[in-house]
Length: 523
Image (cartoon, rainbow, N blue to C red):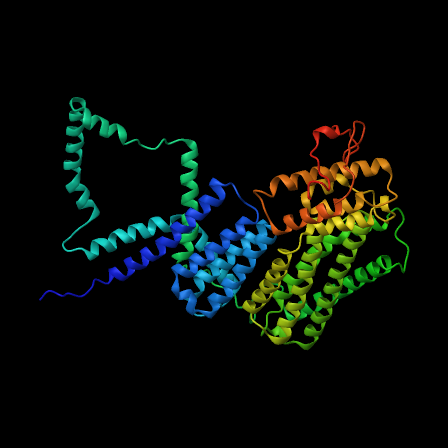
């Protein structure tokens, strides 16, 4: 009896087709945006939103999973961050959230960040080979759905002789028959130029990226996590040794913290030959390293449920020591703030302050974990959540603009307590420094030579922004250009002549060779 049941491979073949359509659409959108029109910047955010729509269309299971919707919402937020002000951070966070959304329907629960890190790494490593793996599987499925014992190897063996023989005969006929010759001449093969090869590689990259989300696969084997609980036999680690260590550590930290408080808060004079700026710059990062080592010590020697963690005196010493470590982190942040006040603000110094705050939060989380006997997975997740929240906020804050505004406001040239304004650094910030420099340029009472240098740097930044907005549009860049035009509205044309200076005081080109950026252009 012959069964008329539909082969089980056919529904899967249909799903392949439904995923292929949105994948090819994403390739087309990416080619049009980035290859044909050479757009980038905020257009990356539009492309990211298209990827999310393709993911929803190609994987219906996501629409039925609340956890997937949460991850998709996070990915959409980072896509908007790309439109707001495109950055590598927002791009990486978008793909991380999109990867979580693609994988999470296949998991029972979120579990912990360490396991998800492995899943996302596997997703990224598999993505370049995913289309080839699925193509091989598709051929097998098609063979299984056909009658008889069909295989690609058998088909090639059957077709090789007739195809090769026909090609030889037609080639000979083309030498005698002009119609056949013209037909073959019309079949022009594409010119395999480097440009075409680059475009094909770009298509392959886009297809692999979206196909990895449409056809994700969970890693079969994950490295085990660590519970971080119970006793751990380590040489030299005992209740007595941990108690003695914590007692000595607390005394050393108390001495350091008292000296920090006395010098940083002005209770005692600085050591001879050392300024406050030197002291602030000298110890910020070593103190953070000390706090990290303290955290590692607590994680290793005071695991929840261990004998050391159950000892009351040790728990009290740990609480005191972690409190001193948090004070040490605060002292490091104060040192960095004093150094910024004495010199200048940079993006890296802002990032350092944020990092120090996260270290302090991590120390507090370790203390809470010990008191409440939380798992290691909880500790990893809470720190990842804090870092993710901070990074998400930073996606919408231009640290370069914050640094430029602070430096302009506190520069020595405008009566501030800081050092002379580093115009070359501000010039390197690009349009992040445009509005602070423009407000400084229009400030009354500046020295003429300094105003000329500010003007030269601002003009170059302004010209660069005007030139790049057509292809590297962002909402932030558009807003800055509109604000700059409003500030320049009705202003006299800015004229630079020979003999004026650039950011470093060198002569600049004549006014005739610089772009005209006045209020008239914006009208």
